[in-house]
Length: 219
Image 1 (tube, helix red, strand yellow):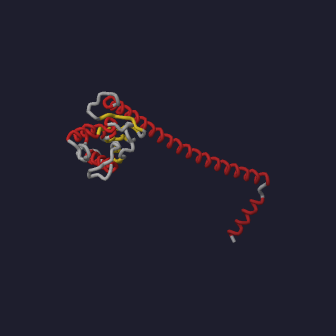
Image 2: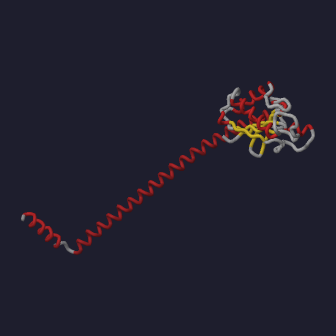
Image 3: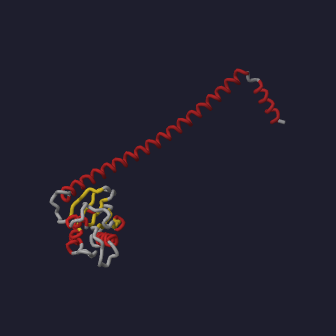
């Protein structure tokens, strides 16, 4: 009975609220809801802007690291070109640093590394690779074997492609073994006579084309 009387009193009080007061209350409620919605949208936009700034900061940090890396690589390349570049007196006979369509590569004359028709490294070849390995530590490289265009007649090798691949493998094995390069930094390929260093079928051209190239890959 007590609670029934209280409910009746509340209903009576509500009934006494004027239409103007009711409109004001509803207006205030709508304004508050709009303000809350605006604050939520502002919070969403602020969060999105913060995320954009974080991404931009990461990107700028990455670019700074890349710029530093590129500058360091350029310095190292300039040093290598000064020592091994085409037309400069090389510190090692039969070795030069050349520009190829895929980047710079150490070009090592086949006669420096191997005896004719063989894939076993000579002692001179090992000394040459020991010296070159100092310039290769920490780099990604691809060892590429090349031959001249004279077909193999009497040899252990089926053809020039086989010989070029085996020579590349021999150099790669030495670099990742005795010379201390990481195996996952070294890949290899054999190209036979199909990527000549120079055109021509005379002895000088063929001697130039019998070679191993060590391509300096990016990172």
